[in-house]
Length: 299
Ligand SMILES: NC(=O)C1=CN([C@@H]2O[C@H](COP(=O)(O)OP(=O)(O)OC[C@H]3O[C@@H](n4cnc5c(N)ncnc54)[C@H](OP(=O)(O)O)[C@@H]3O)[C@@H](O)[C@H]2O)C=CC1
Ligand SMILES: CC(C)(CO)C(=O)C(=O)O
Image (cartoon, rainbow, N blue to C red):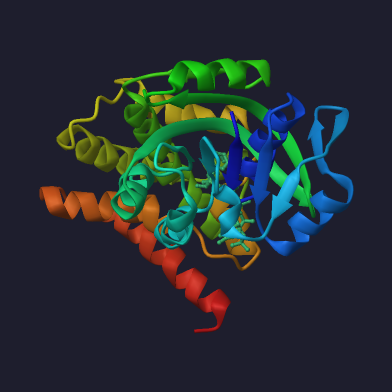
């Protein structure tokens, strides 16, 4: 199974690195600083106290997807269409594209651009780039993948690489459950730059999260998604399980990078409007993050 990773960041380098370490041919496609480092000395992969150096192919050219049986698609949600269009001329007609992204509509948006087999995957991991061509694993790593023509072969190769993968017809429901967590935490952590433990201890935060979750559940349910009745306690309980964590939106905002907020709270607002469901709490959070991004950019 020949693999290409489109978007050699925290997710792409972690999963691509594990697959390459297991012996599969993997090509990373990423930015020059990562590609140069990987080409010179291999990918550095920190897992717990162990560090692995994984030799693997790397390129800055999107044409690196040519010939791949499986593409791990791991760019941020805002880049989905543009990167999809750029890869299209190089893709094999029978390629399987695994969307390893947060948000629920990336597979549909990518499929609209490239057609073919585009598979939703819910990603339960915490990883971050520690430097050029250097990825650090902070926890978990399991995947829930939608059914696809090559799912058993993919699961087998992933298991051999130490990536626990479940195939589920309800992978989209899992993505929605993750989206609801993101809608509750990401903007509030970004706007305050607080880690989750301190965030939840602030007066009124649990109440705001409760409103956000209620709106998300209404939109999800009207979209035909099954949401666990335990979603609210599970969302509010997350802070205790990772009290020191700041959201990816908080990290993007702090680094002056574009956030994925249009595909988190922003998506719920758009879908709510289509369905006639009001989403005022999500709207306030989305607006404040967009305004803060604009201020940071100096608009
Ligand atoms: N990190 C995590 O622990 C988790 C992340 N996710 C989700 O996974 C997805 C990926 O996240 P993550 O890996 O953290 O993001 P990163 O920003 O670390 O990785 C994406 C990489 O792709 C690069 N890229 C974008 N366009 C191109 C292009 N045309 N050519 C080459 N490289 C390109 C980006 O460069 P540049 O920044 O310069 O554009 C960046 O280096 C997101 O949807 C995220 O929400 C889900 C679960 C956990
Ligand atoms: C689950 C959570 C909220 C963990 O930080 C996340 O996915 C993110 O930060 O984007």
